[in-house]
Length: 79
Image 1 (tube, rainbow, N blue to C red):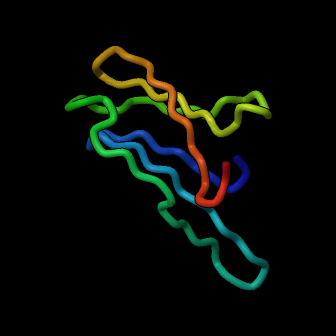
Image 2: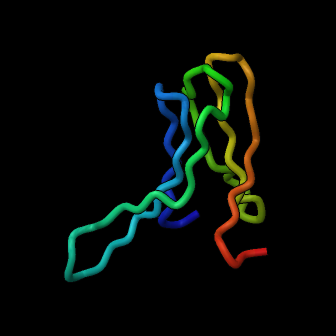
Image 3: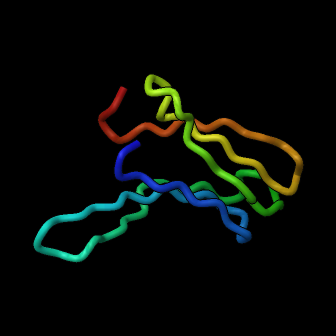
């Protein structure tokens, strides 16, 4: 997931951000996905991309609810 950053948050959300850089401009960050309340009403404490290359579009999250959830991130136009 080159250029993608996943965030966990105490506001009970997960965001996927795209980091774009160029030689002539400062880096920019765009929110490309947002999950509100992915762990019901509990804080999200941890997110991690799968390190296996063929499964890099999978993201794990863990929250105060004690549950680990697996998410599949797909970019628009990707099948």
